[in-house]
Image (cartoon, rainbow, N blue to C red; front, side, top):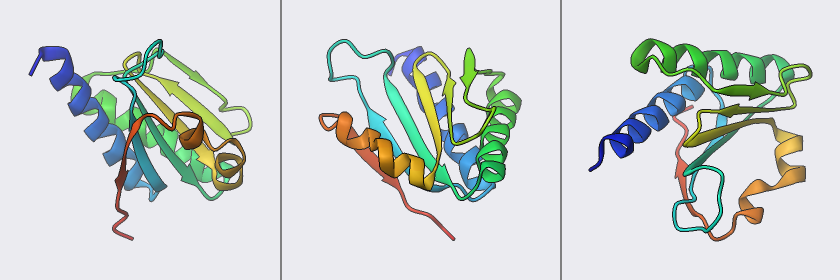
Length: 123
């Protein structure tokens, strides 16, 4: 396994841990590596029940990834209303939605060719 692949796997694990820490829901990991012309290798998608929870998920992801791996997002967008926050870690892009916004945009269908891994919730 190449160094960047190992780092990416560790980053995804820490992102998922950050989401679970504050009980984010419906975690999906989309592997985009087999799809041509994508902006990154993976999407991690989850949802929260309110703008407060969406903000908490984003903060938890940042704290967990930064503390464990010294990884900070290159760019974060959408925190103003916290309906859909995008966190860009270059190889991994995280989408944190409020549930109704996630259902409306349905990113998983847009990227139907991606291999999707669903992380089961423990709560």
